[in-house]
Image (cartoon, rainbow, N blue to C red; front, side, top):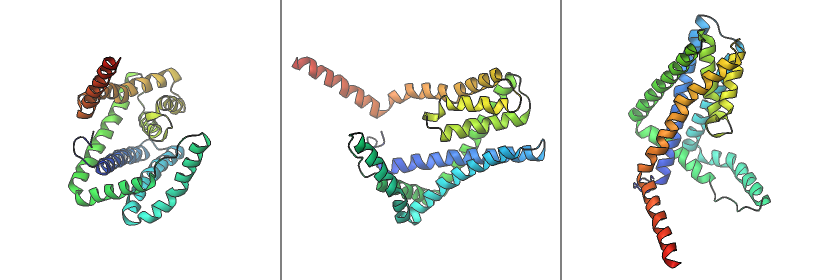
Length: 245
């Protein structure tokens, strides 16, 4: 879609990478504020403190790679080369073609994304502010759904939200489908909330913040230039096949 709009693919990839880092950083900021409030009021278990450190470590790693991709691209290349070779060996073992060299493209995207930050600090700050606001709205949504199902204590609501978002970030399934719901149930049961209530909260929350936007986006994306062009080309191809027959 970016290519058809005249946007260089590398720049589009860099913008997507930068946006993801901004979103994760916004979530980490809200998590730190919420955990700080819990620690100052009802207290915070060391287990949840360690979970918060994991979030900070993930976001810090993303930012570090971004910076190194700009300042020390050769170092990132050396670190990713063994992964590239391993992936190619696995593909060959399964009789698949090796991937085109992708390490250079990734490092280039890191460098371009860091350059976008350097050249557009105000825009980056606005995106970060919007991400913080979005994470605050997600936390409010999760908490209100929890209250609707009878959970009124702030600690399970905040920790449940952190678990839901974290597992969406690190899960091997797309956006943590199936994994997030199970993790939220485990988190709630650790606070004495029933499994039925925990599952209900997880399903309703995910329906609001993931499935509903996903379905709306799946419909609206059909209006983009790329999908319109591909649809027309598919129709022409079908007509061409019919005429040849």
